[in-house]
Length: 221
Image (cartoon, rainbow, N blue to C red; front, side):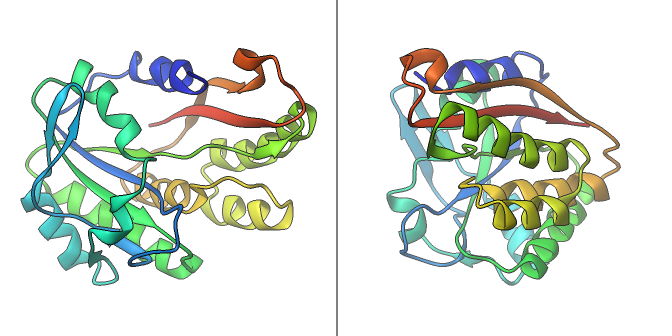
């Protein structure tokens, strides 16, 4: 109810392929730090969304840091909230989920380069989706300033700058590692610009401006 209109504004702008790589945070301290799943399907109220076993296998081969691990995904919501949008708009599709915990920047670089290598060599196009909230549980005014710092780096496609500013300014952007790895992959694949489609905070829905969460929808091309 808070972030859906931001995500929806992004999906409305896209011609969606049939393959997706979803990357997001691992909110709970369980499972591998860089966790991938290769087999099966995820079930939502709209039906089952199948995993892309062949694409996952290629990603594991390209990035040995990835670990096949269901524990990291078992209680995680950041990727599954994207699936209803894909189920409504993409038709038949397959996806690979990657959940990232506390990961060094150098390992995020390795992941981003590996994703780009696999996507560039694939016979079918794949869309990269980084799932993340922005700043959490501070006032609306503070959150908008902090999120502005992070968005400046995202829009500049500055992966290292994003990683550093989130730490330096104490921005509680849960999926910063996902965004960093996607920016690195996108740049390898030739992306030259990023566009902020929509920004909002939970206060825009709830009216509570004392403790909010920020949301941003960005397209990278």
